[in-house]
Length: 433
Image (tube, rainbow, N blue to C red; front, top):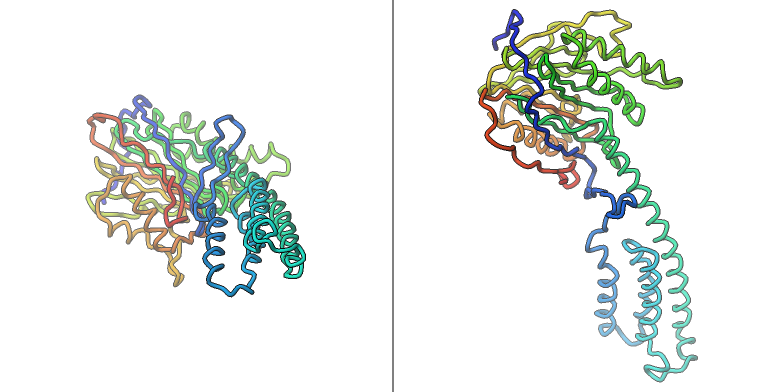
């Protein structure tokens, strides 16, 4: 691979003609379908996810099963007693009002099957002796408990839907849509969260078109939870602001690190100051056909050209952000040629740390080499599917990827394809959105 030894100064791309495409945050959960919690039309918060169709029809199927068993069993077998469990079956998918109605239906249907005085001429004493009346009371008791259970389940589902809805908003603020096209540079992104109930995580990426070129950031915050999100938000906010002002990548990385330190000092009790972030800063100058990279303890980017793939190992990697102040090491810039058709893949360690059932790590370099030339969107889709297949949909860490491709100088002839909103996430091995 040819490497540009001397910086070649060209006219950077202005942020004119930037086309933004909404990106889906793809989500990984284990074994359960993904539900998108959109706001209710009236603005009353997120709507509850609908249970699976088979679960909603379970009470009806249960009654049909009882009707099938009834004529096949001896008369002395009180099959109607099976209806005692009907309210509990309904509580799996229906609300408290529906479960109460199912309870009333169960008692009435039990009486019909047992042969009530009005239907079969049997006396109340007969029903009492055969324990039918006791079964009615048991059904009412089970129905009451099932109604309470359904109300509790509904409240928990509403709380979970609200939490997911807020997490979605927070994630969109943190990972706002990046430009799909900046001049003749195409950008694509991928995010998979290993969190079971929320998108939110500590991986981050951003792309900012500036007068210096298109500046990219991808990072991974040490740790999990809201503290990781707090640190990531501080980092992304500092990058968005400093990317326009700083003349080169070392100054940009230094300013981002300084901003994180200041942010930690402004928040008493915050653990931002104790968090370090591995990151890669990249700058693509399209006219000069170069990409400059500062690597702060992060997995090396991949450069793809004409079906060949190289790992861009840092000549002198810098320590992770928030540790550089302690170490005192300067930031070193590696510069590489970046021709038309070249692709630059930035990714977090969620990719390299994905494991197969036998414990082997995901060989990202070998995998990408084996795929051959792909478009940016196709490559990230392939990476998404391959990660889930390799790990059997059991990613143990958040995963983010950012791909930049240098197109020809000709402007785009029309709008790009509509985004395919697919959602994490291994839920059914690649949940949709």
